[in-house]
Image (cartoon, rainbow, N blue to C red; front, side, top):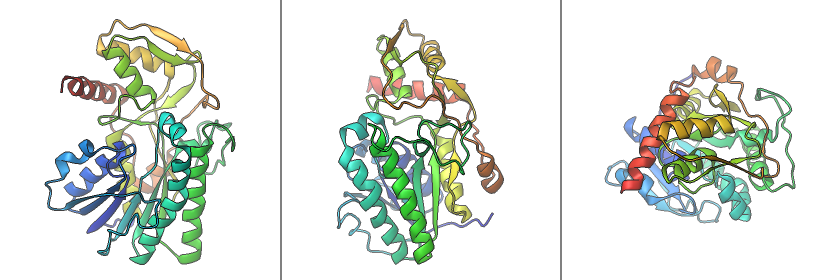
Length: 320
């Protein structure tokens, strides 16, 4: 593996859930980090502890706008493009903004990387596989996506972004890579962002019924955020173009996940079944052979430990 390290890094979406953890990791590795975020779904609170760090700079800006990255004038050697609403509640509320950041925002971030001959990484998603007919999903699988369904604004935004990244690599020789992130969870998730883990934890801590979509038999492969960050940084350092799946190997049903969270919180909450959203994937599990072979990456935090840490963080946050 051709490992490289960097001096100056731009992280778009750096005040988001995953982005803030990435910023923290890069600072710990001695990088200067410029975090660019419009705070539509990110939060200053996520990076508040980083603001005093001499190597950290926060820029409130929308990368989808023509001047979104104008404040980044100094040369950079790595651009991590994580900006995008990532939960169904957010991208259904912000459909045009989601499409904009996948198209205009990705192009702006690519142009910045091209300007400085920097390494570029796109944070893509398992959603490019849609409701997959192949299981587990390999990077070679083209997916089963409804291009006009309610989830399409996110799915197609990321699929277009992947095509744009690939075109820059082929046309301009830009040093690009693509990571496909599977269901990531952990501290700093927003309680109301609509994804299963924070929703179930909030409901359990509040003594509310846990709302399980459909019969709960649909599966997900959860990845603790530290493992996801490990994968992102390893791919950026490797020089590999991707796409590379980064995701947990432990597949669990949504119903079992709800029951585990009830047990971990000691809640008296009951399970309540609700209508399943349109185009909700029935199964989701990555084939991570490529990540193991090319990056030496595999998840280190098991599901029980990761959920325990996340529950503890939510419980502490509720007391603040």
